[in-house]
Amino acid sequence: MAQVLEFKLPDLGEGLTEAEIVRWLVQVGDVVAIDQPVVEVETAKAMVEVPCPYGGVVTARFGEEGTELPVGAPLLTVAVGADASGGAAGAPDEDAAAPGRDSGEGSGNVLVGYGTSEGPARRRARAVRPAPRAPGSANGLGAGRQTPVAAEAPAHEAPGSVGGGTFAAGAPEGPVPVISPLVRRLARENGLDLRELHGSGPEGLILRADVEYALQAAAAQGRTTRPTAEPHPRVATTPTAAATPASPAAPIRSSAVAHGEVRVPLKGVRGAVADKLSRSRREIPDATCWVDADAAELMRARTAMNAAGGPKISLLALLARICTAALARFPELNSTVDLDAREIVRLDHVHLGFAAQTERGLVVPVVRDAHARDAEGLSAEFARLTEAARTGTLTPADLTGGTFTLNNYGVFGVDGSTPIINHPEAAMLGVGRIVPKPWVHEGELAVRQVVQLSLTFDHRVCDGGTAGGFLRYVADCVEQPAVLLRTL
Image 1 (cartoon, rainbow, N blue to C red):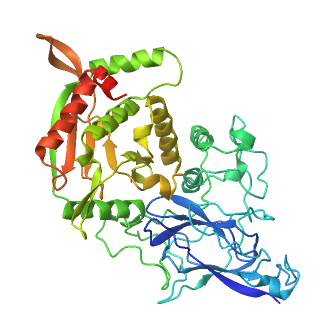
Image 2: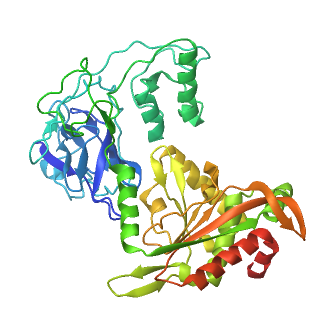
Image 3: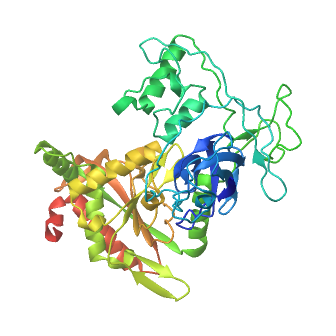
């Protein structure tokens, strides 16, 4: 006899208490294997797939795409011990279907962003993507517990074609060879069916470049892609007269707005950034000092390093190496404040965060043990984390635990800034753009590559003398990279 088990949104770790449903990976009636991903969720730190610890038939789903659920809320129910027709499925007897037994019907490994102990014994190909729901359709949420969402009928679409062989001749059913959630979202928001694409990656993996090429080719031929999903739920606009009216049970995504206004929900990454920056402003008495530095010698040193062969050294890696050397001399800035104990906690390791602007918003990936890495190691880690940020594959562990932040806002074409400290850290070094400016060099006026450096620091952990000494040392290393030789 089948036993219906409820799978709840697991503890996400890292202080996260809620997540938004981005995309369901299974339909009601699908047979799922143990540890098979069933839903793609977005937290304040990352976008990940959640594996189900039970194997069986999906009997209900709770919440539609765009719904935000708290930890512990039900995600779906699974009939364990029965297949789609009601017969036995993977359990030799009725007792084997009970959770927590050694029968293998439940793994218990459901933390978001982390792997499971064993791979699934079997995987079922995903069903054909469901047909789009009309905007304003009900999300099935009641006043208290969520109501299951019924299975949608599959969409039937004719395969398209674009010159250059971007689209496949047919759209086969089954799993789509896509890893990046951002690639799926890009295709979904532009009405592009990924099943019609030939991926250029390893083993046919569909990359972002494949989607962008297909969209460009379609635009060049005047071809419009077909809508495969409702408009993204993050932005709510005032409905026009021609819009389909919402049903009484439709979710309220924004309050009434005047004509022409747009309201963006303050949630997900944007909401997390707002909360953290607000807390930083409330709790940290910050101050900022800045200095201009001649970066010509640093740029020349980088050029010489890269000309010597081997992996290329990034400018950010050199600045990070300067930061770690400066923090070794001024450890007060690599600390945090314990308000409950009224203590300053100085840290013996440097986990260096760096600000990165992505399609999902501002994120701060963390380079672990940056003080123990050389310029090549820092360059490689910056490249890895930057690519993960761009593709939306950063894990919660990649985004937490920083002790000091390096903010290169020069990439936006600005000279200076007074950034807000990344709570609970004690300081942030800002780097502006490096541009030719008049500069007195060796007693004569010359045009040099000048950069503005700024340090925002928690005035509770040190006074201006310490902050100024740190910033002056950083500037000296930028102007004369040989100063670093003393600490290498």
